[in-house]
Image 1: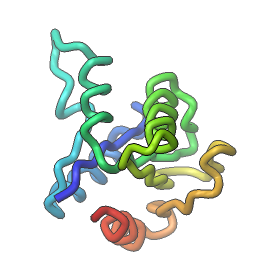
Image 2: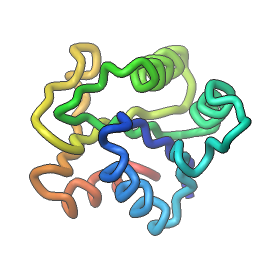
Image 3: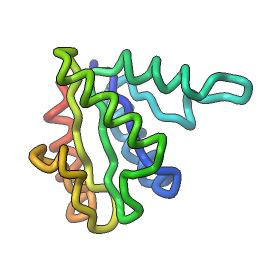
Length: 129
């Protein structure tokens, strides 16, 4: 199955964890910060490794935004890799609240986990091959 990186804000960790667990239950290899980053390890190094190895990066949008320093670096570096010809796909997902995506990602259709969790999850799973 696919390697999937779940990018989210700390304030959305509970819902993002549910998403990561659902993706894992579907058989995917999921990179989720709480599962990967242990005390004494390099946060930047592990995030970089997780992004580099992932075929899909799910960018979880929320009412709290996507502008946190960590999250911004994750999706922007993935977009740069994608534009440089790497085989990586950004999958936006509305996780909580009502938030428009950043202008540079506005043309990418997102999975709406707020309006209907099951349908949004099914859409993400179909997009992940």
